[in-house]
Length: 205
Length: 205
DNA sequence: ATAATAAAAGAACACTTGTTCTTATAGATA
DNA sequence: TATCTATAAGAACAAGTGTTCTTTTATTAT
Image 1 (cartoon, rainbow over the protein chains, first blue to last red):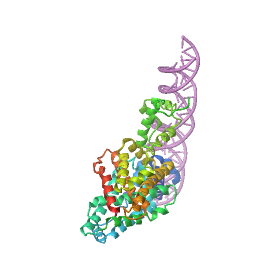
Image 2 (image 1 turned 120 degrees about the vertical axis):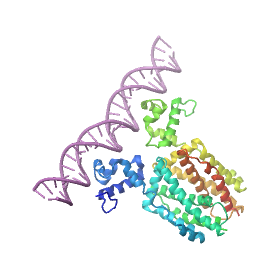
Image 3 (image 1 turned 90 degrees about the vertical axis):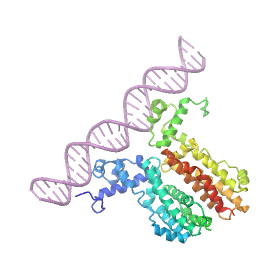
């Protein structure tokens, strides 16, 4: 009786709307995607679409929340343990980041984020807290442990974290931009590993 | 008689259209800015606007070309000379980058670039060549000289250049995002210098 | 003063936009 | 079988879009 968000109970049409809208929004942005275009691609009339969603914004918000749904899940203990081993901590973190970069779903969500970043304040703040701060937190915690154990040269952990994450982000942005025009990204696939190697050489004591 | 692009001979209205459109485009993007909104802000009717520009796209392209009009002007000799001194090369380059980051005009052009990056293929390609490749070229040339003179540890100059520029870009993006919501950026003003210091410590021999 | 020119206003166009009605259709429930 | 419910279609709306006419106004050159 009460609305259930399980995929099982949800109508197939609503699921399809979500999927179609996700593709269109992450390709043409909010303004560039019309309700009619979504409906047409789903195979129904615009009016029928309103049986599933209140309005256009509700569709967008429904999708947009997925952008930050793949947070970095590193427990305090996990960080401690990995950081004690030094480089493997950076490798694990980077591999996770790389995976998200090349994951089809994460990729289109990242594109959507980039498209709407300068148009949507809510998204901007989420970008800062979820994308930046969250990463800085995990990384600086790891770097702090490394410093305590004399694995890396002493410095400001947050500053080092900033240095580390910025390159990861830059690679991801480049991959996203190039893939948008279906251009080759081969030369960037190993960039993540190169970054870890270079960075570790830079900070290790 | 022939059309002259000097500011002197250009009508004040056309100049104002350029200015107004620039502000609006860099705030709401191409789709988010209507011809009527531009005209209203200028203080004329939409129809009058067409006496100065062929159509909306012409206004946009006129402004968009300014995005990449502040290229890094480092001559071959200048790079050679500075790179021989090591760190000052990075400092000079970074100060230039920092200046562009906080320059009002460059700032709004950068915002426009970010807004339209995922919507405009032309801009995407220009971003890659003008923003990325151009910087990599200058930097890697400098790093190459440094390696030859044993100022920094031997490695791939382009890879080091990539590492260096990515952080600069990330800082710039953050500044732009925060400033959009008129949030403080004090904590980021010294980030550029910190980056140079950290990076130099990382690569110097 | 007169003619020529540039720039403005005003009205209208064809089209797209998000949204809201009413009506039809099918499947499940009673 | 009759009723209810969910979903669909169809038509229409008011508002906004880029653009193009024609007409008016003011300035400049003759």
